Image (tube, rainbow, N blue to C red; front, side, top):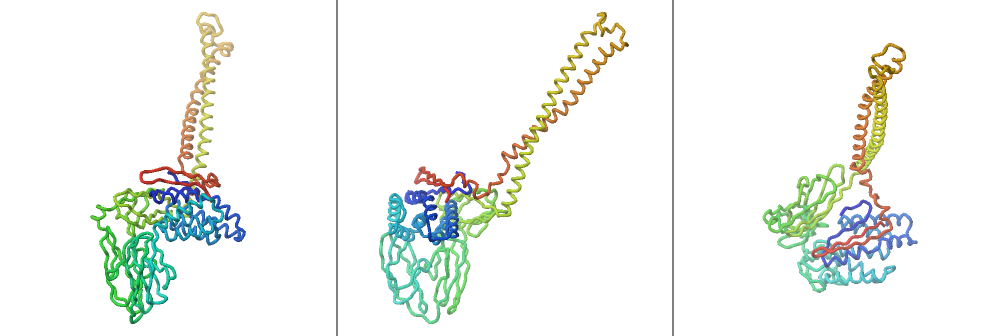
Length: 516
């Protein structure tokens, strides 16, 4: 499907479980969003303008498949103008991203204060919230240290003691407790949705201060293992707190050869290691998938997980799981996105590269000039071809008249006929010259002149036709000066919502067109 700049055209392939969530998002009215912001009396004009801009930017990012960036814009719009419609959309984006804890949190607030939501949307919000709650588990934490930091998969989420159970997504996680003066303690748990577990952490005091380790890598979705214990999953949002001393560090992921190193951290020191696991080609061939890039521009350079794959010419064989994809091309802004590859399947990603402002200006100027010359060529060609054709018609008339004159004189030039043009008579008289020889010579001259002008006429017709064809080609097949205009189709889609839906094997596709 062709994407049009400026129109919010969401096309999201999905599983049956997530289909209803995005359908709700598609119907999360852009028009009510416009109305809610317009009716806000507490926010200033500047805040409303920024909220509208961020909401539309979020739609474009969501449309391009960048849910994380879209969520940032939606959340900023909500910070500027708090209303239920915005929060409703935030909850649905969280659901689409597979973050049920945040989705249920946002939708709980919506259900507690539905505001202008219609009964239909309210029912859908409740249904989505209940579906997401199926994937939320609770962990009751207990520790012997006050004010200890609580971590989930290496990310700080709370401070102990906690008045309420820790809510996490079902699956396997590493729960950690970190406190100054104590040896950090981490435990790996596997928990099902709606399950509830209890964990007790007995931290041991240590001499000295906690050390911190920064692990850098381009590979997402890899397990960080410290001293044979899984600590977190990349990308890492912060450093890892460790006790001082020697540590064995390993980064591992299916489809890759583990990268290992050792480091000794001094008391209270900070260290950094860079790990880059190598692909296990045999594992990739047996259990990997394919990445196909459908790029708006030709010959972009592709970088996967920090490693260049050269110019994009066809699908790439990659290990299953998440990958950081970077596309670069001269005169265009870099495009980066995290893409998840399914085993033994081809994942197709549509990429719309945005030009730099300088190139956009040069392109529009060149395309406008090209189109202008095309129009000039069409007009000039039509005029020239028309003039040539007119001259050819004029010459044909002149030639016809001259030939008629010659025929009339020839009819009178019969020997012995005693007519004015009788060649047997006196051909030196002024009458013979005026009535026979001079008109015949003039007719011959007229025919020769017409034949000579025909060369110019036919050349003009040919050149004019060629110029017209060139002009039509430039206009019809030349670059569109508005190709990269972000609002090229804004007027068409403004104030209009067009939801669409069709089924595919194993799921479906839902779309919505509109402008905030």
